[in-house]
Length: 198
Image 1 (cartoon, rainbow, N blue to C red):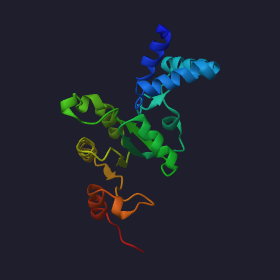
Image 2 (image 1 turned 90 degrees about the vertical axis):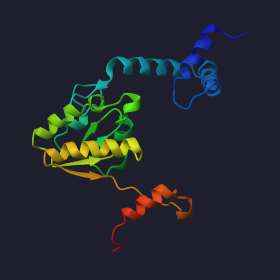
Image 3 (image 1 turned 135 degrees about the vertical axis):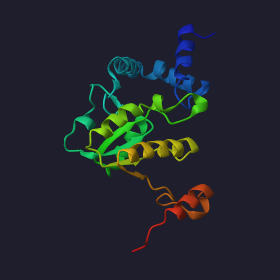
Image 4 (image 1 turned 30 degrees about the vertical axis):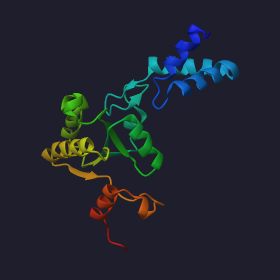
């Protein structure tokens, strides 16, 4: 017979993406059997994050402050904004070390069937930044899906109305990828976006 508290912990852990009941059970048992101090640190960190983390007023990324460190950094390229769908996308782009501009996080993508229209993506806030006249280019880094492409086109049209250049992240064969394992959609985009070989 199981403990009601253990059952509640297992059920709570299943809220994590990719964590089913068996994985949640393994995690819960590990924390209770072998790492109660780790469990306390985890609980404290979750509680602290829930209390402190909100959204940056400028880019909508997660932040402890009203303006996140990226937006507050005067050394970043203020004339370039990378448009992404989620805070996870910001982490991915930042980990590349190749981008030194600012961000705007849509917190979703256009999907009328799911109730996501332009108002849900904070596009009024983005347009207000574009109207300031400091931005010269937006980089569209939305997902390679129908909704991501529609969102990218909508944002590009918005930028175009303000005379701002739009570019899209290149798509194609990943570094180290074998051609025979690349799906046809990716291969088609790679062919369309081919560049001169020097």
